[in-house]
Length: 363
Image 1: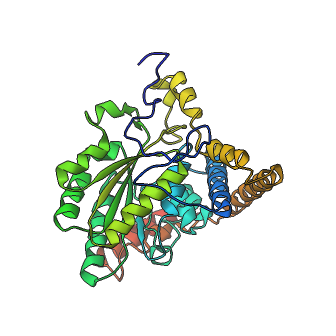
Image 2 (image 1 turned 135 degrees about the horizontal axis):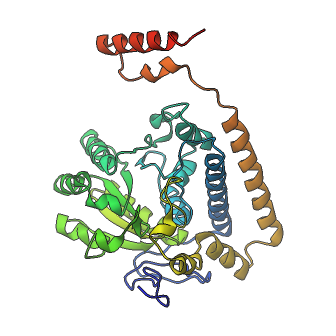
């Protein structure tokens, strides 16, 4: 790595890209997409609003209002593009960073903040949004997704599952086991890896000696690498992979080649392990700016449109902040609720012991 060639800054030749960092539309023989002006404007709006939610959450954590936050800064296109490729019947399994996918699945952003504020255990019903609860254990959600997909298959359904994970998770046994099961049983699942170049402080080259998407061939299903900062390409590639899954063609691994612009979480300091010039090089690939440039160049939006979206983003940020701060703290005993579907003698005993312990501090 040198000051002249930041790691990961040059687009790999096998990358599927439909919109360049300069906002130029390019064609691809296998993954192309036709979007109306309104659809492009809608995607731009999604990207801006999702980033605003994320920035507000980071600010809230820095002010002591959240215990932790995992920022998606720089990964908006991967999440919005793939999220908008889903049908209402498809099921998504996230990690703890898929705030953009949650937005696409109509999950209230305040429920995301409430989880990291410690006032609930997720706050949304996965069945209502077809969006599973956040998963903190690295890679375990891939097994959940494959199991769900196998259930779709056995029920004779025509939907699919998609599961999100990072480049670091590909080193987990759970992920590789899920690849095996999905392949052998031809499960209707899409593995969506957001390769943001860093598994906390470990660079990609310490995770794999080959591009991640090529791992799929060893398990017997296709892999594709897409420009993760290109919302058009992410939408087109994910839409095709989901369609193949629904039609009985089995799993696909999508590697969204992107970059984590912020810290791994708000407890992390990325300046300790990565160079500033690497970050600056990736800023030129900003997913929002390239869509904005495309809209301007093709006269699909005017200044009034952009100002309106910015105003909507500011209003959303204020609303999210106000409602987050107004969230009531749960009673201490609530930690024992919803652990089991019904009564459980040991849990009841532990609850009574804990409440008795707390009562000893009352005056």
